[in-house]
Image 1 (cartoon, rainbow, N blue to C red):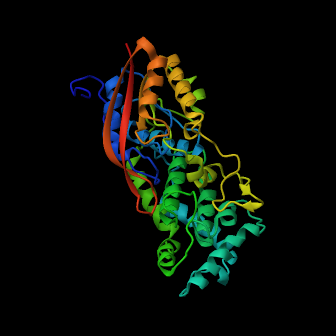
Image 2: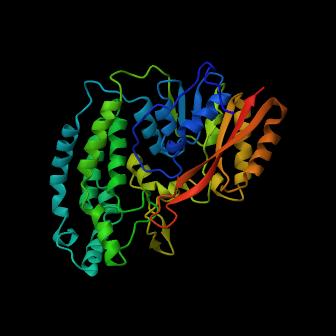
Length: 404
């Protein structure tokens, strides 16, 4: 079975705060994942090759050097919040941050005219008129530097007023860029965005009010206060982070998986690639935009702005493309082998290709130089949809590859 508890350098799953809602998060099976890592771990760093919400960084941060990597830059912010953030004299309180943000918001409150307000709404038509008026802000010209969310996302996952606060808090965050608290501020803002969003936990498409029931449900989120969720998470995060720099020499990168493996050596790779045809860059584009804050060109299809308001030229993972997934696994296994590292691969029996096919590729690439094994567990996979399949039964498999 899995690792003997008497084995030296045994890693454990330590508690950590969560910042975002994330599809396929391994939080609920972290003990299972780390038991798999212990099965092959022989010292050195642990590379989280597809870090996503960086939960593995949170679980292992004080025990071993972690190299957290994901091609999406929002992941690096979450990893820094776990691995490199700490409190010092420059660290602001939530009150200080919100005071500065409120000063910014007050300067732009004139933008929230009566037709953008969600007050005294009783009919579905009135509600949808207000929604559409919010969305029309994308046609406005703004003179202030931090207006990205107010312009692009008002009336989508958030109201114009909520977007004013997102932009203001993002502006305040940049005052602390280069400080050890910067990543905590941004991560706490991601949390506030997630829990005030009227969507289903991701940002693929916002919901439309098609009847009174859905209108009332959306209104719950339209009335939520960004400030409350930001300050609650930020205060909790400050209790979690140390008052000194982490002694582990953690590394955080935003590289393609092949490029990341080319600079890693002599440790253990944990790989949790996407399982299905949907790209994470579609589901979490709003977080990527928050971090980059680069006023991206938005995707247009058939002459119309795509409803999800996705970033143009967003990353497309080969693990999500049926014609490319087999080669992607081969490239990953060859990259791991070239580093001289051991591997723990998470994959699902409901993945893009059969788990037996993945196993066959692994056997072909690793050959006699590695011992291969596979373990599995059943758990409820959160789809982050508000339909009948919100939780789906998934059999999670770990393919273990250890150098002989």
